[in-house]
Every structure is written in structure tokens, then in C-alpha cells.
Image (tube, rainbow over all chains, first blue to last red):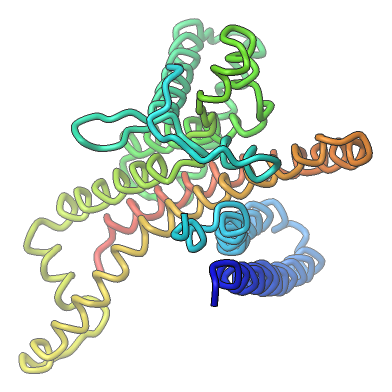
Length: 90
Length: 280
């Protein structure tokens, strides 16, 4: 195989990897936030006087759940624009 | 902002080259290691700005009708103090100012993300011309640099160790390290449980600073990269309107992320230090 084929192979696999990183990360984060949001709304409908207390905690947890997805997104974008595996070829 | 670059990059063109240029730090060699001048300068300047602002409003504080500036500062202080009060039950004289400093400093550093992406290179172009701007690297968001966030979380980690030892003594801390998650009654059981306990405790202790720093870094880095991608849309007239809309939408959403990440960093630091005070 010559160099072009090597580079194309790495790029193709990286593209699939980027898709998986963003897609699966988004899937997990969305399911998590969806479950938490529905529980929050249920609790708010049941006991509206607890809303101010619950809201702060909900946003805290949104940040915590979202963070792992965002970290994955950052890694995926890093691979998309400055692929460290490809720069080995010079 | 020195006009010298120590890392010669390949002259990549187009959006990819633009992004790579914007992701390169302004580095210098200090004591044999690479030193990021830009992160250091911006974070130090913002920390000084925070101290100056709060010190001045503390000097000017009146017990009468507060002005707008004093009201804003009081709101921030009260908000942080309430958060600390919820988590930590004890003497707050050290922890509340620490939390306030973390919150405001991280907030200021994150807010640098909202400044226009090309403001640094624009200034260099204005004063030094295009050629100087091509060789000058400057990243404005210190929290999008892993070194800054790891340094902050390591400081928090050392503080948790210090407070564990202070609250329990060296003996209590060591005993907790050896016997903590799995308890056993007999002496043989205790000895058998030492190795799993130490491994679990090590994982628990080390995962805290790693997750704390990676969370903030990842959020800010991804935000910065998305802004760069949107800036790529502004390059041609056809995609310009989409770029404006996308930039506006992401900017507004990013305000939420900025405040949220500063808040989370503060709350988790307080939680970790409060956990260090607790006895198992």
C-alpha cells in the first residue's frame, strides 16, 4: 500500500470514530437529561414549593451530565481538525 | 504579546489552518519546559481584576442605601455563601472566600470565550501588520488550556488532603485510607481488606481532580472550537447569514455553560473539601 492509501485508511476510521463519539455521547447525555427533566417536572407538579431548591440542583446535574458528552465532543472535534494520528506521517 | 513563535507550524490553509492557528499557544521556554504565556497572562490579569473590583467595592461599602455596584457584589457574595452553607456545616471563614474566589475567577476566565475570536490577532494586525499576526499565537481563554484547569484542581486536591489530615490527624487519615469502604470486625479480615481499600481510595482520590479539571477544560475547549467552526461559516457570503445566526445561538447558549461550569467547579470544590472534614 502506498502513502495515500494509508492516509485515507486513517481518515476514514477517524471519521467513523468521530461520528461514534459525538453520536453515542449525545444519545447518552440526552437520555440522562430527559429522565432527569421528566422527574423534575413530576416533582415540581407534585410539590411546587420545592421548585426553587430543586431547580438549582437540576442545573448542577445538567452540567454534570452534559460535561462528559462535551468532553467527548471536544475530543472528537480535536480529532477532526488536528488529527494526532495523522500528523505522524508528517 | 511577543511576535516570536517557538513552534513553527506547517502552513496549512483554509479553515483547518485557521483553527490550528487559533489552537496554538503563545509558548516560551522556562526552566526547560514549555510555558504558556497567554494563559498565564490572561488568568493572572483576570484574577487581579477580580481582587481589585471586590476590594474597591468593599472599601466603598455603606450601610445605607447601596448603589448598583455594591448590590451586585453583595448578591454574588450572598449567593456563594448560601451555596457553601448548604454543603458545609462548620467554620466558613476560609471556605466561603475560597469558593467566592474560585467562582468569580473561573467565571471571568470562561467569559473570555465570549470576546470575538479574532480580537487578539486583529490588534496585532492593526499594530504590526499581517505578517506579524501570522506568526503570533494568542489563546484568550485560560480555562480552555488543560494546564490551567489541572493546576486549579490540583490545588483543590492538595487542600482536601490538608483538611483531611487537619480534621482527623495523620493517624485517623491513614486509618481511613486502609479500612474505609470495606469494614470488617476481625483482625484477619481487616488485614485482608487493606489492599482493596487502598486501591479503591486511591481511585476515588485521583478521579476527583481529573474529572474536575477535564470537565471545565472540555466544556471550554469544545465551546471555543464550535465558535471557530462558526467563524469558518463567515468566510463566504453565501454562508454568512447562517454563520451569524449560528454564532448568536451558540453565544447565547454558551452564556449558560459559562456560568454553569463556574458554578459546578465551585460547588464541587466545596463538596470535596467538606467531604474531607467528615468522619466515616
